[in-house]
Image (cartoon, rainbow, N blue to C red):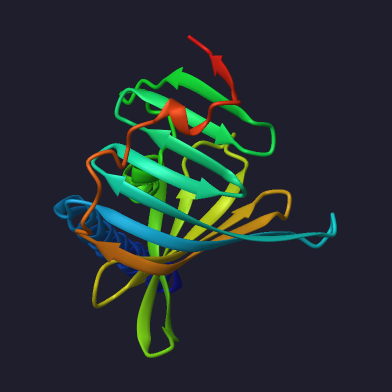
Length: 213
């Protein structure tokens, strides 16, 4: 009898986990569909990195404008422009511009647009807690990398239940490092300049141009 109860309990638990996984997957699919429906996205964000063991506590802000696979990212004093073919990394502190060709079909190539849909493969996911953040209902989904060599232990993805926009991302490393990216502002379908994603060399007359290919 005890064995029967144990088996029944395990089956019910397994069914519960599968149901959670489906709810988590459905929610992530909705996030992906919403992101792809916009002509462009403009995000202001806050980034923090913490490791109490190493006494590391860093905070910074940034912003990114995206349209399709094109983007302009401003973060930690560096501007990165991707026009769909080439990447331009502009570092004012060094007065240097690095130009390289990016293969968008390369799964290992990390871009801001992929950061909004990175969760579609390579993770196990379950529904986690729900939090009220200044009147907004944020549903968290826990992502665990399927690759055992991944240095990340888990990722919590906070999703605004009403808008299906990503509110924040909390990444915990296996060595105790925690990085948090919080979206302060999420604007869509903004009027953009025709040259929004074009690198204009004349703006950087004294910069060293480093062409990698």
